[in-house]
Image (cartoon, one colour):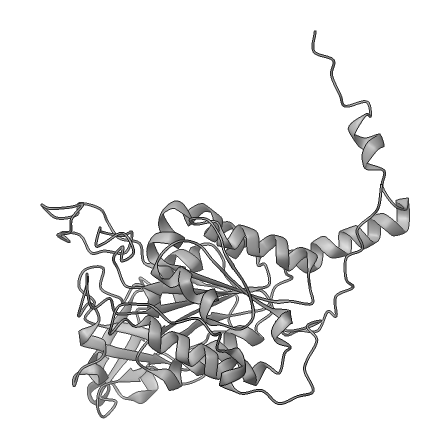
Length: 358
């Protein structure tokens, strides 16, 4: 039986270790496919696609060494519109397929594009295990808080009381907070950004791609047809009072003049919104995305309203280093070959651990 040789990984500390680079400068046009982009007019997916196409040349990677994997949903059309390798897979299973690629092909930059329904409903189990294993992939979770492709049913992130085609009297479910979920799964990189803020979106993508391990980026994305205005508070004239920017190493303030801030209660660990003028800047919480303990990041994630989103921290919640599943698995294969030589699959299948059924 012919053995399969796994590529030898370059175990640098960044997420692109071992992925061949290109010597030819690239532009956005190099990453735009010849397919007609087909989403509803005004869909936030257009803005995210433009940001990703504009960002990919920065990686300096060959297009054939980048792969985008999607599941089912509006966001799942993403691979069609990028001139890289892509796979439109099955509902909720994109992280599983991406895991197989990441383990066997360290020469690839692996991306997953998913939605709140695809990732958190049928795919919830696959998502949390990819995150806890810390597989080297970047997951873009488009959250519009609705099922768009199937025409407007409530999703795992829809607010309680949401009236939809599938919940005509209002949803009775408690919604998931994707950031809290990812932090609970011990994800090593967790961030949130917004489809309409291209500068911030690009900066978060840059950090996520450079991270070695599982990176989850939640992107608030508007669905103008079935859930229009879900994030209006974060996009309109009062956005300065609604968005809480998270910058590592800096005190957390927000408001048009930075008049609001955050303070952590020493007794309960809860985070409170305070007035900077009353308490002073020295009392404010300083954001630390690099601490191993995820409790602070989790407390920050709870500031997001579980109903209609009126306020939300935006930025990188957690960014820590931990060995990745794919690196460790390849090391085990190498060690096994060095100590035992090439395996014999036929001998394994016909070995002692078999049974004869009468």
